[in-house]
Length: 73
Image (cartoon, rainbow, N blue to C red; front, top):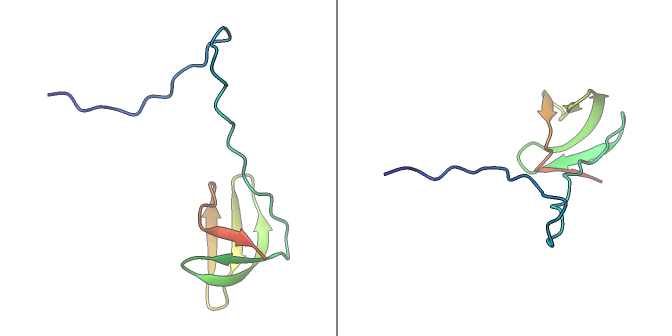
């Protein structure tokens, strides 16, 4: 028995259905206050191409996109 795989399907221009929305990531800037579900309150120290470095007090974390559990305050 074969297992099903998640396949990204190509959108045809002649399709009557809408194109799936593109993923939009939040933009962060140095010095912003953020909160994380696991680590709590923190301040953005550095913004990289696909990641942010955040100071959560006792430790610093590098969090990569998508920022699923990270929210701006």
